[in-house]
Length: 133
Image 1: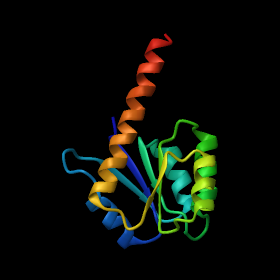
Image 2: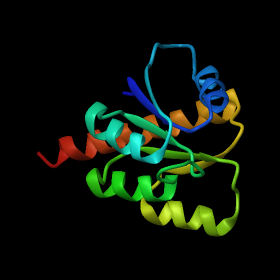
Image 3: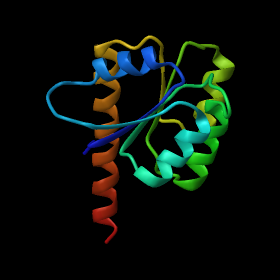
Image 4: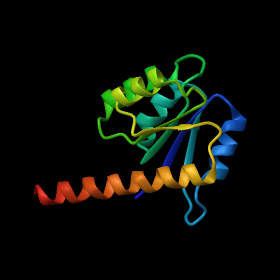
């Protein structure tokens, strides 16, 4: 279940676009942060179900923030949302534990598809945890 979403991006415009792309079939509690350091702190205090993370930000970039978040919570569901689509960047964020990477600017379709995949993974994790009890 996705209830709380953390969005980390230094661009107010990008945050607004991302919010508008969220599926409208349910209300989400959205928390925002404007750089990687704020994002890490917000992740720790808010414990979101899903995090959208930009890479190019001041103070702390998204790569460093992703690494800290994944070390803090190996089960974190982080979708990197970036304009940088280089293979080496994709390989780096995936090796650090990102769930996926989507291209900026996002579309309603890309966000909905990503969130459906997150829900599927969360359901699988829940089933695996229940079967191991």
